Structures are given as structure tokens and as C-alpha cells.
Figure: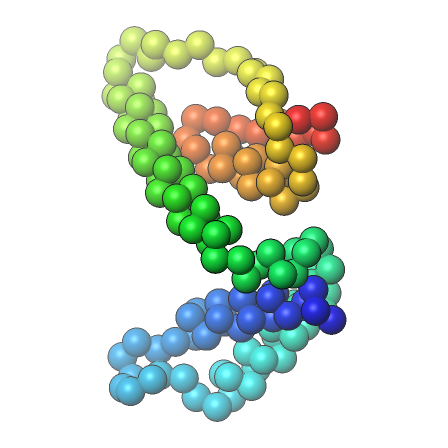
Length: 136
């Protein structure tokens, strides 16, 4: 049960933000949306809560949230830089590219960390994650 609590709150917050009607003052939510959000968040937490956080107390660690903010800013910078590089390659008539597959070793051990790394690589334009293994 305790493993599912952070996912319930995260899913409910996402639901509220998605159904918020910005043009209706003062709040924009109706009672039916909130009740349905609780039901959907509980269903999501019940189905996927075991896999969300290995140790639930880590979810509320402020230091980890600080790392998330720093990581997000660094990733946004490098993603923007990659977007500009790909844009330059597209408009450059000589197309100076050498496609290939690169194997990258990493010290990451947890499934969550490897998944985040693979998703960030795939989100960067011009790159694709082919396989992520437990060996790093």
C-alpha cells in the first residue's frame, strides 16, 4: 500500500492539471472531475504502483527533487543544442553526417535510472536507443 501512495498523488495531480479549465473562474474544476480523478488515480496506483518506486521514502526526499531539477535543466540545454545541430545538418546541402551505432558504458544500476537514460537518449533529436542491458 505504501508503495502506491506516491503514484496515487502524482497521478491525481496530473489528472487535475489535465482537466483544469483555464477560462472558468475561480478554480475551473467540478466535483465530477475530482471524483473521477480519484478513481482513475487509484486505479493507476493499484495497477502500476508496485513498479513505480522501489523505496517509497525516497520519493519524498528533497535532495532527489533537487537533482531532478538540475538534471532537467542540463538535459534541456543539451537537447536544445542537439536540436540546433540537427537543424544545421538538415539545411546544410552536403549533409556532413556519419550514421552509426555507438555502445555507451554506464555505471547506472537500477531499472529506473537505465529507463530514464534510454528515454533521454531517444528524446534527443538524431539519436535512438536500440538496447539497454543490465551490464550497463
